[in-house]
Length: 105
Image 1 (cartoon, rainbow, N blue to C red):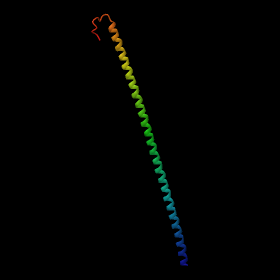
Image 2 (cartoon, one colour):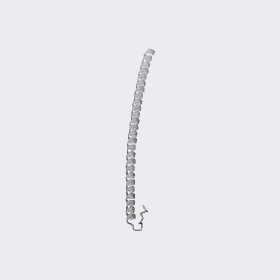
Image 3 (cartoon, rainbow, N blue to C red):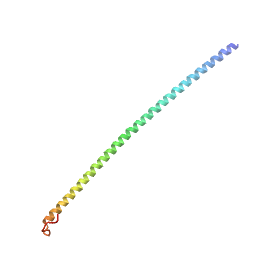
Image 4 (tube, helix red, strand yellow):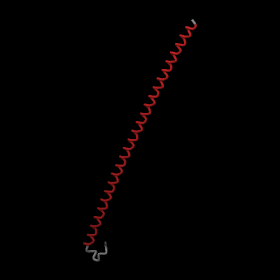
């Protein structure tokens, strides 16, 4: 009778140990999968952030270049207007009868 109880008890303990071991393996596998998913999500977020940063830098560069071009065009227009005004003044000085000696230039 005692031998029979020991066999049953050891069988139950062995079954419980296997169940416990299987549960631990399942939990460990689940933890690994969760960790892997988390790492992949993190890598995807980092890649998305990098792409967004590259796009932002590109847009800022284009904006800067457009502003530079616009400022250069405005400077050229001002310079042309100034030169045109100086030329008109020179023509007026040539035609002005008060400036007989043509000392004003």
